[in-house]
Length: 283
Image (tube, rainbow, N blue to C red):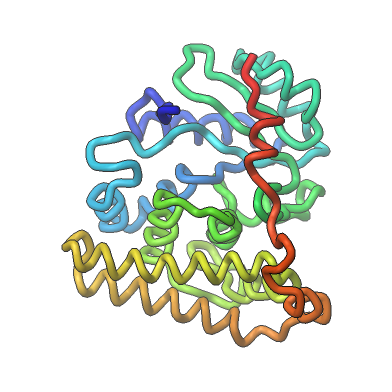
């Protein structure tokens, strides 16, 4: 099946997405951008990061960078989100998704079919969970604007059991443009928080470490292909190593150690295909 891309220029799409977030804020709704567009927005302050994004090519050279608009919100504001998209923005919705999975996720379609919108409530549930919380004003969605935090963006990517190249490239771009910290700071990656999450979940840790190793492999590969300079490669790898060191040094919980004894002899991740088959049926 061919990939469907957003039919707007990148900057226009980004501006329109941020405009939706601003409308939500004006109505007291906490709505945040996640996924590739969040990576793009966080990279705009670092000019060279976007140049690398283009140089590597997320879907290949001369192809668009985005396939849809992914958003996160609090479930307690679900009714307000529905009103915003259906009554004010006039987006069309996926009937089956709304009927069966409204408590977790909604899918909308732009009135002119420029792009699809996926809205996740309280957490992402794919190979592993990325939890945002459920209380407006007290959850992780309140820590950044107009996107989720860089920390949660990293978790969003490294939780993928069968990670693909576009997500690896997103991680490379994030690491190029942002250093590692030990607390939540704007435009920094909170390595301590990531380490704490992984130290309590062996399955998540296993896939995360595997994926970070793949980031290193492809960073070196892109350098060998002259898609990254030596300086760019070294910066990305140094930050990657810093993050991995924090993860390694974080004390693991009893739950983690007990699950580690079982290892890969028992499934350690959620089958995403099953979720997609159940939830992506179009109207």
